[in-house]
Image (cartoon, rainbow, N blue to C red):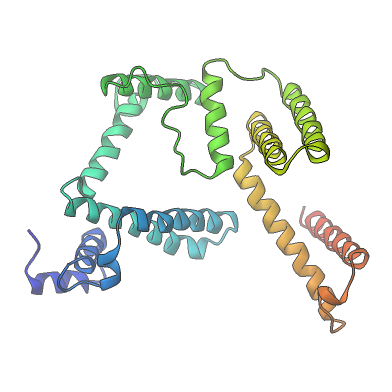
Length: 284
């Protein structure tokens, strides 16, 4: 039962109200009679893209070391959980407390070496294997014993991340190259097939071969202990930074990239690259 209007208003305006305050604010926003028309109109599907976006903004703040922004970004992400929880409660499916208790129960069950009697004297790799064993037992208890190896890898994940998760699942049952060199050989093979497709086949085949190459590149990242998403984000940031340096150099002459040519911009790129290396060396 919702609090009386006066108590609700007091809680919503309490700067120290914490999580109960946030939950009540969301309930008020979704109130069909007095809430916000935009918030009332939303559903799980319409909010899901915002949830993904906020998770990426958290990751971006961490990648940039923007610690003064991280608290706010985490708050935005928490709001997404609260939003979904409120919609779940409205439909009598679940609520925030059920979500919190469910994940708490899961963490207790999956960490018997912390909350139970098992020894903590294990390597991280052994703990990962134990985690997967516990998850398999959970699936069996839920009647999912006949699920396929790759079942449950979310379709909505970013493609590179999903590729890595699929490959990890397959590796657990032995479907994996034993050495990095074999992955590199496969990259060479896929690159050659992409060139052949470009020269002799249609756009659909070219796209397929391009996808195969990306998939193997993600596998190489996994073998090297690299997160492909993080690596690509870093490459994007580097490209943005160096292209900005090109623009700045041209702007000093009153010009833009449209007033330059590739040769000049390549030279400016190389200069920006050299300056970055010099700055790193000076900091070491």
